[in-house]
Length: 313
Ligand code: CP
Image (spheres, rainbow, N blue to C red):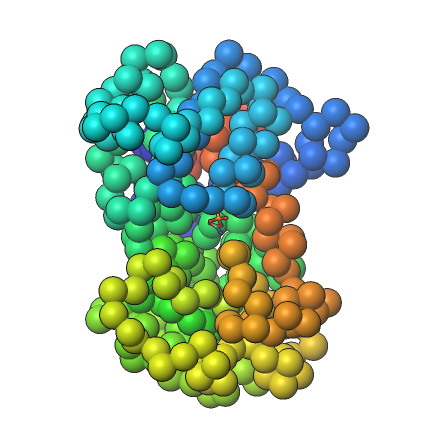
């Protein structure tokens, strides 16, 4: 499997191996020369059909730190505006002999569809409500560094769970690595079916004293087709990590958010900058984690197996 489309395609062992590989790339980022030749002569296209700051930038930096050539494809400046189809666009990019295509799209399932139109490795950089596998990996990377292991830890994922690809990816990845996950949301922002083992709370106060990590999600207003909440203020009152609730969080708890944040709604401004916040570490982890993903896809040609060495043939 050379594509990374859905975090659930990886076993717990494969997830751990990928995180180990990310750790070895993190070590390269402490050197004075941070670029390694692992993907020299490879070409990666960043095909983002939806806006992004963190994911696009960190895939770009990660690919360059692996010595790959990077092409930034901008949907708004492409021939899509002249009526070209997505399929023709991908086949055109593919005909130029690219090795990897990193795809973000507002519609679920597009990265999987793209694999049918190209021989390049396809990496899902977020598709609709469906999946954001590299976000889940970098969050596991940060949590594993913080605790040593996720096994037995209790993580609350709070906010708009129904419309969040981060929630679906992270529920799967955190659980696979042994954490207990509770989703916290109003009934209107919960999916109709949750994966086995995921617990539910309808108020952040139910779990705030108990959890090892509080993972906040913004309300995905661009994906809401109807009014599912009375107001941002009411959401903050019941589901926001306010300064008062943050005082109740354990002193060694981890505060996480995938970004972009809406300060003052799901997280109070000063809580985002609390010493327990791992939000900056999450952004930083995007580089080694995406280096590991690109290397697995383009260098090794598959996920879930560490690079072969003399010691590990
Ligand atoms: N976390 C995340 O996907 O952020 P961007 O939309 O800025 O890439």
